[in-house]
Length: 440
Image 1: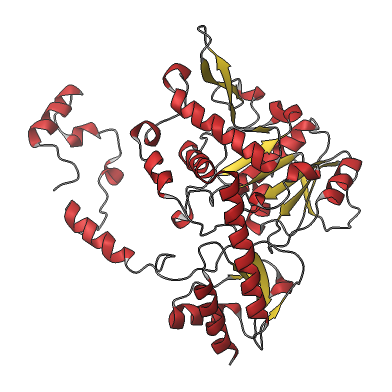
Image 2: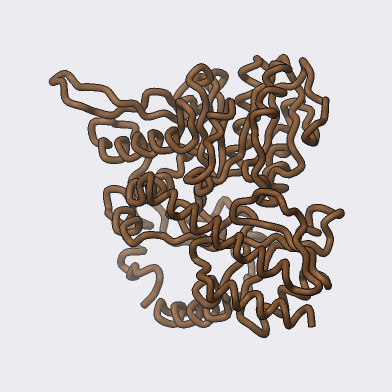
């Protein structure tokens, strides 16, 4: 079966419609030396043959369906209820685009409204948009929002080094033309001043540690700066929401709520803030109203994208709202409810603590930090992390942890392990047995 199923008669009809006799004549304005370059491509495949080839390549992958996974570091293996895909694959959602016409987009608008409502409940904030590409761009947009709140009169941005390294890199890339000074900030540092637009911290941080954010909020607000918190939404099912600590903007990666790993995307950046900053917020906001008959309806209350308003008035030029992934998160949160979200978080918490206790008992391995943590923790390894991971995969079929030496020189030889509700006790015990072999 050919990929382009047009007959010769179809070709002639299309050429006649545009007033040319041949394909060569159609491209006559392209210089002859570059018109038909030799591409040296292999012979074309039928759809059936192409499918066989792709399936053969796919079998070379080792995925979370093939063995235990203890790798996190920003993308997490959480359970996706069947109802998520059942709703997502409905045609009216699967093919929906920007809801420019509210009268024919009520389903999409209501789904976004419900998503925003649940994100606000989860984060303890007043307003949520829908949404951003991923957690990294949401963090970058939060920094831009903070700078805009201060009308660009404050040019310093303080970021904890324990915010995800890739998020920090995206923030720097995103703001490189804005003349903002991006600097690292450690807890206890006195580097916040009247030039600081915001302080960015992570909760739990990149190493999985949980800190009381109240002193950080007080330090930021004392300097007149905003506190931006990068949060794990699954953790918020159990931990105190950042809004109760005094956070001004809460962002993060929503991939764990129904999106799956998907080999890296598409993901979902959630963004929530206080109502007083709503007009500085990027993205869009769906609101609830009533029509002329008094019936409930949903509309785009605020849309500060440059596609909708004058470019100079826009707060962002983001060109999608990741609507389908936001819908997945909405279905996930609605299906689990408050109690279900807490149960998932508790499973992650208790299984991770069991894993850390067992691994800490292995000679040669040691726990890096004995403080409070959620589902990720750091262990010192007796040999390079890459060697440990290669052994785990080759001999045991286990996807190991993240090599922290890639981002932190002082943590060379340290592995970041992640345990979620998808890792039963049997898998944790298997990991412990494998690490005991490594230590031996």
